[in-house]
Length: 369
Image (cartoon, rainbow, N blue to C red; front, side, top):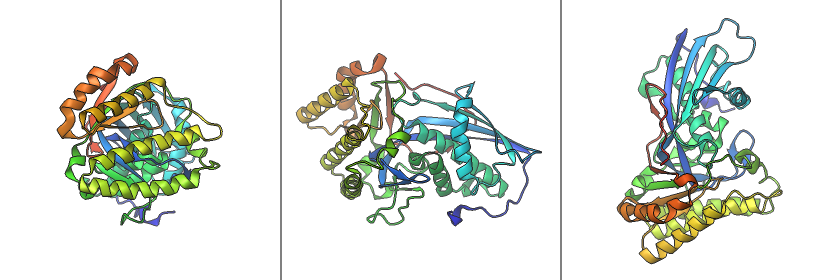
């Protein structure tokens, strides 16, 4: 148990109230694949925090008279009550309750909406668990009678990790590192830390155009995929490689070395999918159009001398990353040459953002073009 996140005795009693937060998705540059118990990563990761792809979550809480029957939760996703999500939320509550001891004291009505397609290779679990976690940390802030600015983002990251590992990278900062790494002072397996102050300014305004190759749900969940790393023939080599790649990427991002950035980010994406291809059982999440997009992008980069690169999460969709000063030419190429490979021509324009923010209400707005 992490003693630093166990709260002091609550100072006030609140009969009911509401909080609402928006948390973004993130796209990993160094991939985390494989974990120990309670969402502890087998290797460190580094990610861009996104801006437009986000989950908006409101939590209304009201005091319970009978607190002997476990948790009391109603969960709504995009306006519809979703009983099938409750087991995952109950597991999250079980893990978080030692650090948020008020969870059995209230009935919670949780309403959540995404600005992007659910379960399609964009990190919806990251943004949703991050938004939920910071809502509960905000409720605790009120019970401790602390001002808004005293909200503990490190604790929010820690709590988010208990629901989804990558969620801990969706709370604070434009560039976030998660996982203990010898070259990063203050790095931790328990929460993400902001790394943007170490980065060259070119990386703090990077663009991410997400090509929605396949909007359907993945055939294999990330949870199952992580589990297959336990007996993977190449697991230890991969974990060591991630440490080495992180050190190299940090150097490239500190100096503004775009060529090295491109090389490492694409290698990480392909390594992630290589682990899927060589697990037992193996699985393939890329689609034919994923490969066509990659081929065309690499050809365009070679002929143009520009620096767009691709990365992939655990899905078929392709994230095209490129710097602000190349935005016009790269975006024109995407529209002219790549959008036809997207399902129904769907894509999302996003860029590096600042993390979670408090909002007044949940109001869904689609970003798919």
